[in-house]
Length: 317
Ligand code: FAD
Image (cartoon, rainbow, N blue to C red):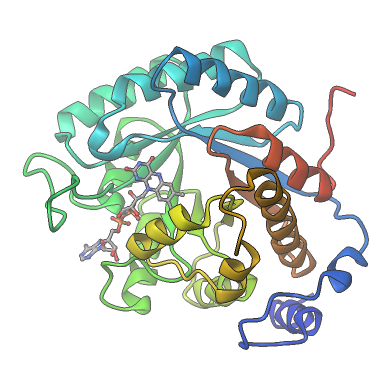
Protein backbone atom coordinates (compact mmCIF):
# COMPACT_ATOMS: atom_id res chain seq x y z
CA UNK A 1 0.00 0.00 0.00
CA UNK A 2 1.35 3.46 -0.81
CA UNK A 3 1.20 6.10 1.90
CA UNK A 4 -1.58 7.86 0.03
CA UNK A 5 -3.59 4.64 -0.07
CA UNK A 6 -2.97 4.13 3.65
CA UNK A 7 -4.25 7.60 4.41
CA UNK A 8 -7.31 7.01 2.23
CA UNK A 9 -7.91 3.68 3.94
CA UNK A 10 -7.72 5.40 7.29
CA UNK A 11 -10.15 8.10 6.22
CA UNK A 12 -12.45 5.41 4.95
CA UNK A 13 -12.25 3.72 8.36
CA UNK A 14 -13.04 6.93 10.13
CA UNK A 15 -15.63 7.89 7.62
CA UNK A 16 -14.80 11.46 8.63
CA UNK A 17 -11.86 13.67 7.86
CA UNK A 18 -11.60 16.65 10.15
CA UNK A 19 -14.90 16.76 11.99
CA UNK A 20 -13.11 15.84 15.22
CA UNK A 21 -15.31 12.76 15.68
CA UNK A 22 -13.60 9.57 16.87
CA UNK A 23 -13.46 6.48 14.66
CA UNK A 24 -16.49 4.23 14.75
CA UNK A 25 -15.55 1.37 17.11
CA UNK A 26 -17.31 -1.32 15.12
CA UNK A 27 -15.15 -0.57 12.09
CA UNK A 28 -12.00 -1.00 14.11
CA UNK A 29 -12.82 -4.18 16.00
CA UNK A 30 -14.03 -5.75 12.78
CA UNK A 31 -10.47 -5.62 11.42
CA UNK A 32 -8.33 -8.78 11.65
CA UNK A 33 -6.14 -9.08 14.75
CA UNK A 34 -2.96 -7.07 14.10
CA UNK A 35 0.20 -8.98 13.23
CA UNK A 36 3.86 -7.93 13.32
CA UNK A 37 3.45 -5.22 15.95
CA UNK A 38 6.56 -4.05 17.85
CA UNK A 39 6.21 -2.20 21.12
CA UNK A 40 8.52 -0.21 23.39
CA UNK A 41 7.86 1.14 26.86
CA UNK A 42 8.86 4.30 28.69
CA UNK A 43 9.32 4.46 32.47
CA UNK A 44 10.41 7.19 34.85
CA UNK A 45 12.99 6.62 37.59
CA UNK A 46 11.42 5.85 40.99
CA UNK A 47 11.74 8.48 43.75
CA UNK A 48 11.49 6.12 46.75
CA UNK A 49 11.42 2.48 47.78
CA UNK A 50 7.66 2.08 47.32
CA UNK A 51 7.84 3.57 43.82
CA UNK A 52 10.77 1.28 43.03
CA UNK A 53 8.79 -1.82 44.03
CA UNK A 54 5.90 -0.68 41.90
CA UNK A 55 8.19 0.07 38.91
CA UNK A 56 9.72 -3.38 39.12
CA UNK A 57 6.39 -5.13 39.21
CA UNK A 58 5.46 -3.07 36.12
CA UNK A 59 8.72 -4.04 34.38
CA UNK A 60 8.25 -7.73 35.28
CA UNK A 61 4.78 -7.78 33.73
CA UNK A 62 5.66 -5.85 30.59
CA UNK A 63 8.89 -7.81 30.01
CA UNK A 64 6.74 -10.80 29.08
CA UNK A 65 5.61 -8.88 25.98
CA UNK A 66 9.19 -8.84 24.62
CA UNK A 67 9.39 -5.10 23.83
CA UNK A 68 12.00 -4.00 21.29
CA UNK A 69 13.38 -1.63 23.94
CA UNK A 70 12.45 0.16 27.14
CA UNK A 71 13.57 3.66 28.10
CA UNK A 72 13.93 5.61 31.33
CA UNK A 73 13.30 9.37 31.42
CA UNK A 74 15.65 12.04 32.69
CA UNK A 75 14.02 14.42 35.21
CA UNK A 76 13.54 18.05 34.24
CA UNK A 77 16.85 19.89 34.39
CA UNK A 78 18.76 16.64 34.89
CA UNK A 79 17.31 16.26 38.40
CA UNK A 80 17.24 12.46 38.22
CA UNK A 81 20.70 11.96 36.72
CA UNK A 82 21.78 9.27 39.21
CA UNK A 83 18.36 7.62 39.52
CA UNK A 84 18.01 7.41 35.75
CA UNK A 85 21.47 5.87 35.48
CA UNK A 86 20.79 3.34 38.26
CA UNK A 87 17.43 2.31 36.77
CA UNK A 88 18.71 1.96 33.18
CA UNK A 89 21.72 -0.09 34.29
CA UNK A 90 19.67 -2.26 36.66
CA UNK A 91 17.20 -3.09 33.87
CA UNK A 92 20.11 -4.05 31.59
CA UNK A 93 21.70 -6.22 34.31
CA UNK A 94 18.62 -7.94 35.66
CA UNK A 95 16.56 -8.48 32.53
CA UNK A 96 17.07 -9.32 28.86
CA UNK A 97 15.59 -5.99 27.83
CA UNK A 98 17.34 -3.50 25.57
CA UNK A 99 17.50 -0.59 28.02
CA UNK A 100 17.78 3.03 26.81
CA UNK A 101 18.64 6.16 28.79
CA UNK A 102 17.02 9.55 28.17
CA UNK A 103 19.54 12.38 28.37
CA UNK A 104 18.93 16.14 28.07
CA UNK A 105 21.17 19.13 27.27
CA UNK A 106 19.72 21.17 30.13
CA UNK A 107 21.91 21.83 33.12
CA UNK A 108 25.04 20.03 31.93
CA UNK A 109 28.25 21.14 30.27
CA UNK A 110 29.59 19.21 27.28
CA UNK A 111 32.20 17.61 29.57
CA UNK A 112 29.54 16.46 31.99
CA UNK A 113 27.46 15.00 29.15
CA UNK A 114 30.54 13.21 27.84
CA UNK A 115 31.19 11.72 31.29
CA UNK A 116 27.57 10.54 31.59
CA UNK A 117 27.63 9.03 28.09
CA UNK A 118 30.94 7.23 28.64
CA UNK A 119 29.64 5.79 31.91
CA UNK A 120 26.62 4.42 30.05
CA UNK A 121 28.78 2.96 27.29
CA UNK A 122 31.04 1.27 29.88
CA UNK A 123 27.95 -0.17 31.59
CA UNK A 124 26.89 -1.72 28.27
CA UNK A 125 24.11 0.79 27.47
CA UNK A 126 24.06 1.41 23.73
CA UNK A 127 20.82 3.36 23.22
CA UNK A 128 20.27 7.02 24.23
CA UNK A 129 17.09 9.07 23.81
CA UNK A 130 18.69 12.48 23.17
CA UNK A 131 16.66 15.57 24.07
CA UNK A 132 17.06 19.25 24.67
CA UNK A 133 14.93 19.40 27.82
CA UNK A 134 12.95 22.38 29.09
CA UNK A 135 13.58 25.55 31.05
CA UNK A 136 13.48 24.94 34.80
CA UNK A 137 10.12 25.61 36.47
CA UNK A 138 9.66 29.32 37.04
CA UNK A 139 12.06 30.33 34.24
CA UNK A 140 10.26 31.97 31.35
CA UNK A 141 12.40 30.81 28.44
CA UNK A 142 14.84 28.04 27.75
CA UNK A 143 18.44 29.21 27.77
CA UNK A 144 21.25 26.92 26.79
CA UNK A 145 24.07 26.18 29.23
CA UNK A 146 26.97 28.35 27.94
CA UNK A 147 29.33 25.33 28.15
CA UNK A 148 26.71 22.85 26.98
CA UNK A 149 24.75 21.79 23.91
CA UNK A 150 22.07 24.26 22.80
CA UNK A 151 19.75 21.87 20.97
CA UNK A 152 19.08 18.16 20.72
CA UNK A 153 20.70 18.06 17.25
CA UNK A 154 23.97 19.29 18.85
CA UNK A 155 23.65 16.66 21.56
CA UNK A 156 23.14 13.90 18.98
CA UNK A 157 26.31 14.97 17.13
CA UNK A 158 28.22 15.16 20.44
CA UNK A 159 27.09 11.67 21.50
CA UNK A 160 28.02 10.21 18.13
CA UNK A 161 31.54 11.61 18.62
CA UNK A 162 31.81 9.77 21.92
CA UNK A 163 30.62 6.35 20.79
CA UNK A 164 28.42 4.72 18.19
CA UNK A 165 25.23 4.90 20.25
CA UNK A 166 21.85 4.03 18.82
CA UNK A 167 19.99 7.32 19.21
CA UNK A 168 16.31 8.17 19.38
CA UNK A 169 15.04 11.76 19.31
CA UNK A 170 11.72 13.52 19.90
CA UNK A 171 9.27 14.48 17.14
CA UNK A 172 6.15 16.62 17.39
CA UNK A 173 3.12 15.81 15.18
CA UNK A 174 1.57 19.12 16.26
CA UNK A 175 4.94 20.98 16.25
CA UNK A 176 7.06 21.83 19.26
CA UNK A 177 5.45 24.78 21.08
CA UNK A 178 8.57 26.95 20.70
CA UNK A 179 9.09 26.33 16.99
CA UNK A 180 8.48 29.22 14.60
CA UNK A 181 6.50 27.06 12.13
CA UNK A 182 5.69 23.41 11.37
CA UNK A 183 8.28 23.59 8.54
CA UNK A 184 10.98 24.88 10.92
CA UNK A 185 10.14 22.08 13.33
CA UNK A 186 10.47 19.46 10.57
CA UNK A 187 13.80 21.03 9.55
CA UNK A 188 14.90 20.56 13.13
CA UNK A 189 13.85 16.91 13.11
CA UNK A 190 15.83 16.45 9.90
CA UNK A 191 18.89 18.07 11.55
CA UNK A 192 18.65 15.54 14.38
CA UNK A 193 18.45 12.63 11.94
CA UNK A 194 21.28 14.03 9.81
CA UNK A 195 23.37 14.32 13.01
CA UNK A 196 23.02 10.56 13.44
CA UNK A 197 19.71 9.75 15.14
CA UNK A 198 18.25 6.37 14.17
CA UNK A 199 14.63 6.89 15.12
CA UNK A 200 12.15 9.50 16.29
CA UNK A 201 9.53 8.95 18.98
CA UNK A 202 6.59 11.31 18.91
CA UNK A 203 4.98 13.44 21.52
CA UNK A 204 1.62 11.90 22.39
CA UNK A 205 -1.42 12.88 20.31
CA UNK A 206 -5.02 11.70 20.24
CA UNK A 207 -6.25 11.99 16.67
CA UNK A 208 -4.54 9.37 14.46
CA UNK A 209 -4.95 11.70 11.51
CA UNK A 210 -2.62 14.21 13.17
CA UNK A 211 0.14 11.60 13.26
CA UNK A 212 -0.52 10.26 9.75
CA UNK A 213 -0.40 13.75 8.23
CA UNK A 214 2.83 14.47 10.10
CA UNK A 215 4.31 11.21 8.85
CA UNK A 216 3.42 12.18 5.28
CA UNK A 217 5.08 15.58 5.68
CA UNK A 218 8.17 14.06 7.29
CA UNK A 219 8.60 11.53 4.47
CA UNK A 220 8.10 14.29 1.90
CA UNK A 221 10.89 16.26 3.66
CA UNK A 222 13.31 13.39 3.20
CA UNK A 223 13.09 11.92 6.72
CA UNK A 224 13.13 8.15 6.31
CA UNK A 225 13.94 6.76 9.77
CA UNK A 226 11.14 5.15 11.82
CA UNK A 227 8.88 7.75 13.46
CA UNK A 228 7.29 5.79 16.27
CA UNK A 229 3.99 7.11 17.62
CA UNK A 230 4.05 7.85 21.37
CA UNK A 231 0.87 6.48 22.95
CA UNK A 232 -0.43 7.90 26.21
CA UNK A 233 -3.35 5.98 27.75
CA UNK A 234 -5.33 8.73 29.51
CA UNK A 235 -6.90 8.12 32.92
CA UNK A 236 -6.60 11.61 34.39
CA UNK A 237 -8.06 14.02 31.85
CA UNK A 238 -7.56 17.13 34.02
CA UNK A 239 -3.84 16.43 34.35
CA UNK A 240 -3.51 15.62 30.64
CA UNK A 241 -5.26 18.87 29.67
CA UNK A 242 -2.85 20.85 31.87
CA UNK A 243 0.21 19.16 30.42
CA UNK A 244 -1.13 19.34 26.86
CA UNK A 245 -1.42 23.13 27.12
CA UNK A 246 2.33 23.27 27.78
CA UNK A 247 3.27 20.67 25.19
CA UNK A 248 1.01 22.06 22.45
CA UNK A 249 -1.03 18.85 22.14
CA UNK A 250 -4.70 19.10 21.17
CA UNK A 251 -7.12 17.35 23.51
CA UNK A 252 -10.21 16.73 21.36
CA UNK A 253 -13.64 17.52 22.82
CA UNK A 254 -14.74 13.92 22.31
CA UNK A 255 -11.97 12.76 24.67
CA UNK A 256 -12.98 15.22 27.40
CA UNK A 257 -16.63 14.22 26.98
CA UNK A 258 -15.76 10.53 27.49
CA UNK A 259 -14.49 11.34 31.00
CA UNK A 260 -17.37 13.58 32.05
CA UNK A 261 -18.80 12.71 35.46
CA UNK A 262 -16.08 10.15 36.24
CA UNK A 263 -13.81 12.21 38.54
CA UNK A 264 -14.47 9.84 41.45
CA UNK A 265 -14.63 6.64 39.42
CA UNK A 266 -11.08 5.51 38.72
CA UNK A 267 -12.07 2.00 37.61
CA UNK A 268 -14.32 3.24 34.81
CA UNK A 269 -11.73 5.83 33.76
CA UNK A 270 -9.20 3.01 33.37
CA UNK A 271 -11.53 0.95 31.20
CA UNK A 272 -12.17 3.98 29.00
CA UNK A 273 -8.45 4.76 28.81
CA UNK A 274 -7.66 1.26 27.56
CA UNK A 275 -10.49 1.31 25.06
CA UNK A 276 -9.60 4.75 23.61
CA UNK A 277 -5.87 4.01 23.30
CA UNK A 278 -6.49 0.54 21.85
CA UNK A 279 -8.79 2.01 19.23
CA UNK A 280 -6.24 4.70 18.39
CA UNK A 281 -3.56 2.02 17.93
CA UNK A 282 -5.82 -0.23 15.86
CA UNK A 283 -6.62 2.63 13.51
CA UNK A 284 -2.91 3.46 13.22
CA UNK A 285 -2.11 -0.19 12.56
CA UNK A 286 -4.80 -0.38 9.90
CA UNK A 287 -3.04 2.59 8.29
CA UNK A 288 0.30 0.78 8.14
CA UNK A 289 1.88 1.56 11.53
CA UNK A 290 3.60 -1.39 13.23
CA UNK A 291 5.71 0.22 15.98
CA UNK A 292 4.25 1.81 19.10
CA UNK A 293 5.96 3.49 22.06
CA UNK A 294 3.93 3.56 25.28
CA UNK A 295 4.18 6.20 27.98
CA UNK A 296 3.47 3.68 30.75
CA UNK A 297 3.64 6.08 33.72
CA UNK A 298 5.14 3.05 35.51
CA UNK A 299 1.82 1.19 35.45
CA UNK A 300 1.52 -2.07 33.57
CA UNK A 301 -2.18 -2.87 33.41
CA UNK A 302 -3.37 -0.44 30.72
CA UNK A 303 -0.33 -0.88 28.49
CA UNK A 304 -0.54 -4.67 28.84
CA UNK A 305 -4.22 -4.70 27.84
CA UNK A 306 -3.68 -2.40 24.85
CA UNK A 307 -0.73 -4.50 23.66
CA UNK A 308 -2.88 -7.63 23.95
CA UNK A 309 -5.52 -6.02 21.75
CA UNK A 310 -2.70 -5.19 19.32
CA UNK A 311 -1.90 -8.90 19.08
CA UNK A 312 1.24 -8.65 21.26
CA UNK A 313 1.17 -11.71 23.46
CA UNK A 314 2.94 -12.95 26.59
CA UNK A 315 6.06 -14.74 25.30
CA UNK A 316 6.44 -16.70 28.54
CA UNK A 317 3.14 -18.57 28.19
P1 FAD B 1 15.02 20.23 20.12
O1 FAD B 1 14.92 19.22 19.06
O2 FAD B 1 16.36 20.82 20.40
O3 FAD B 1 13.99 21.41 19.74
C1 FAD B 1 13.59 22.35 20.74
C2 FAD B 1 13.02 23.60 20.06
O4 FAD B 1 14.10 24.34 19.50
C3 FAD B 1 12.07 23.32 18.90
O5 FAD B 1 11.09 24.32 18.90
C4 FAD B 1 12.96 23.42 17.67
O6 FAD B 1 12.20 23.71 16.52
C5 FAD B 1 13.90 24.55 18.10
N1 FAD B 1 15.25 24.48 17.49
C6 FAD B 1 16.04 23.40 17.41
N2 FAD B 1 17.22 23.73 16.84
C7 FAD B 1 17.17 25.04 16.57
C8 FAD B 1 18.09 25.97 16.02
N3 FAD B 1 19.29 25.59 15.60
N4 FAD B 1 17.70 27.28 15.92
C9 FAD B 1 16.48 27.67 16.34
N5 FAD B 1 15.56 26.82 16.87
C10 FAD B 1 15.91 25.53 17.01
N6 FAD B 1 12.18 16.02 28.69
C11 FAD B 1 12.97 15.76 29.77
O7 FAD B 1 13.34 16.68 30.52
N7 FAD B 1 13.35 14.47 30.06
C12 FAD B 1 12.98 13.40 29.30
O8 FAD B 1 13.34 12.27 29.59
C13 FAD B 1 12.16 13.66 28.15
N8 FAD B 1 11.79 12.63 27.32
C14 FAD B 1 11.05 12.91 26.20
C15 FAD B 1 10.72 11.87 25.32
C16 FAD B 1 9.95 12.10 24.18
C17 FAD B 1 9.62 10.96 23.26
C18 FAD B 1 9.49 13.42 23.90
C19 FAD B 1 8.64 13.70 22.70
C20 FAD B 1 9.83 14.48 24.76
C21 FAD B 1 10.62 14.24 25.91
N9 FAD B 1 11.00 15.28 26.78
C22 FAD B 1 11.78 15.01 27.88
C23 FAD B 1 10.54 16.66 26.53
C24 FAD B 1 11.56 17.50 25.72
O9 FAD B 1 12.74 17.67 26.46
C25 FAD B 1 10.90 18.86 25.44
O10 FAD B 1 9.82 18.69 24.56
C26 FAD B 1 11.83 19.96 24.97
O11 FAD B 1 11.12 21.20 25.03
C27 FAD B 1 12.33 19.82 23.53
O12 FAD B 1 13.22 18.80 23.41
P2 FAD B 1 13.74 18.34 21.96
O13 FAD B 1 14.74 17.30 22.17
O14 FAD B 1 12.60 18.07 21.08
O15 FAD B 1 14.44 19.72 21.52
